[in-house]
Structure formats: structure tokens, C-alpha cells
Amino acid sequence: MMPAAVPATFSPTELAAEAGRLLRVLLHVDCEPGRQWNYESCRRIAPLTLEINRLKREQDAVILTHSYVEPEIIYGVGDFKGDSYFLSQKARDSQAKKIVFAGVVFMAETAKILSPQATVVVPDRGSGCSLADSITGEGVRRLKALYPDAVVVCYINSTAEVKAESDVCVTSGNVYDIVAKLPERRILFVPDRLMADNVRVELKRRGVDKEIVSSDGTCIVHDQFDPAFIAEARTRFPGLKVVAHPECTAETAAAADFVGSTGAMMKYVKNTPAPYFLMLTECGLVGRLQAEAPEKNFIGGCRLCPYMKLNSLEKLHQAMVAPRPDQIVTLDEDLRRRAARSIERMFELTPKN
Ligand code: 13P
Ligand code: SF4
Image 1: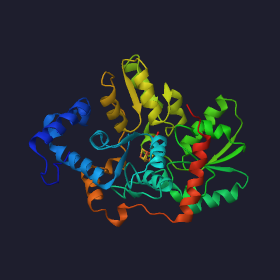
Image 2: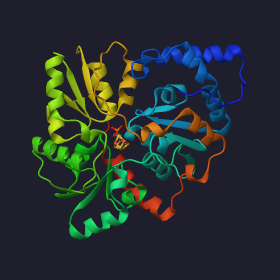
Image 3: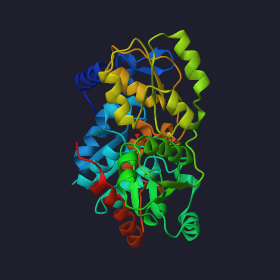
């Protein structure tokens, strides 16, 4: 938490009210390992959250926040918070002139694909993703030449170029249902090799016959978790529930009690009585649960995504006041249209519930 870098244009009463608002929501959240938010730390960021919220109104902007970014962004200035699917829906439906995406670059690109009329801003152009950065459009074209009869399914953690080469896009929340529904038997799945393994296991369990070929990307956060750690945690914390993301290895997923998107993981924890939870995902999700389900207990074990953690209130503020060219997402219109087709197909094939 850095001190706010904006001129003090708010009255002491406004600042105290903002600090109180922030504290009510952040009270149970760790602001640094082992240290929780207090009135002073909330008061320090209050000028910045007030100013960003003022800029949103002035600029007709919305801020979309993925659950992995810092909680002061999610609860301080975010308009919508959630997983990739939910945020894509919000970007598609947005009427705002500007979308500021607190997440990673592929998410901001997806927002631009779905909301081309809006100015889409990303606070840090370096916020990549080991999955999205693992394959290019050219790489997909090479694989397509090897498997010409395959339907190309891209995980949303991919570049606009890769989406433009794909038949359908999926997220962690709809991947099993969409792949199961596709008429083609052979699937070329990019870029997540571990998610492809999890899809194979799940479709076999459902009795769906598919051949899945994948490229070789992995998430540098989720590929770290392993079943030995889960086994040890279970012996030390009886009654522990283990919650994993489908970017984990199939062995880790098999050892967990629940596997799902970050949105589904949150629902599971909120609805499941257990003395302790182990979250095999990025620590931001634990922060969200500490804010929204403070009665739950979490044991350590989550990991940090270095890309998501490049977001900050200061960068959001700067990107709204005077965005550099690299902070504004632009896409070639033909590429954007082709990428939009794969995402629109995803919306059509996602079960409504
Ligand atoms: P979700 O769509 O489940 O939030 O996943 C996004 C992501 O990047 C997970 O690492
Ligand atoms: Fe990419 Fe993994 Fe970070 Fe998600 S957690 S943005 S998949 S590197």
C-alpha cells in the first residue's frame, strides 16, 4: 500500500467516510501476509479511491476487476468483480465510453473484442499470462495443418490472434460442457495442456468420447500445486476441504474436493460447512472470501500471480488521467471480428442457469 498520489481535493469528512467504507469491507482481509487492514491504512488510500471513483463518473468509465487483483482495487473502485466468463459478459453488455480492466492483458483484449466502441485501458501492459503468452496465431495455424479435421477450442487465456484462429472459446466455468457438446470428435485445445488433461478426465467420467490434442502451455501459478502437499495438509487439518482450479494438474484436481472456475470456487466455499479450506489458486481469491465470508478459515497454500499483481490503484489512476499509448488496447478490425466469432459461439454454447 503506497500513499495516495493525488492532490488533497476532498474534505476531511469525505475522507473519513471513505476510510470507513473501505474498512467495513476490507476488515477481515490480509493487506500483507499476516497484517490486516486498519483505519489508518484505509485512510491512506481514501484520496485515491475517491478520485478514481470521481473520474469514473466524469469519464463515463467502468472498472472491471478480476478476483485475483488486490482487494483495495476490487472493493475500492471496481464496478464488477468476478471470473473471466462473468467479466466478458459485463464487457459485452457495457454501454460505458471507457472500460478499465484490472486483470491481465488478454482480459482487456477480450473486452475490446466484445465492446469495440469503448476505449479499453489496461493499467500495466506487462500484465501478461504464461498461458496466453505460450502460443501465437502462427503456432495455432501450424497445429491446424497437422490436425485438419479437428475443431479448435481456445481457452479464454489466449491472445486475440489465437482466438481469431479458433472455432470456439471456453472459460474454466464452461469448458467441460462446451467440449462435450461439440459435434466433432477430435478437439485441438489451446493453450493449456493441464486443462486439456482435466477435460479428458471429466469427459471420460461423463462417458463422452473425444480425442483431445493440446499445445504445451501451463499456468505458472496453478502448475505448482501437488497432491503430496494436499495429503500433508489433510493430516494436519482434519475436515479440510481442498478447492482447486482446472489449470492445476489432473493429479492435483483428483486429490481435491472441488474443482471449478474462480466463481464456482467462491460459491462452493460459501455454501460448504468445513473447519478449514485450502485454496489451490491465486491468493486474491482468498482475499475475496475473507471479505465476503469472514467466518471461513483458510490455511496457507495459495500462490501469487506476478502478472495480476502488477495492477495497483496508482496505475489505474494514471491510466485514467493520462493513458500512455501502450495502455490503450487497439486491435485490427478484421482480427477482432474473427476473434469475436469464437467468443460469441462460447456465449451460445454456455448452459444458462
Ligand atoms: P477464472 O476464469 O476461473 O477466473 O480463471 C482466470 C485465470 O486466469 C485463472 O488463472
Ligand atoms: Fe495467467 Fe496463471 Fe496468472 Fe491466471 S494465474 S493470469 S492463468 S499466469
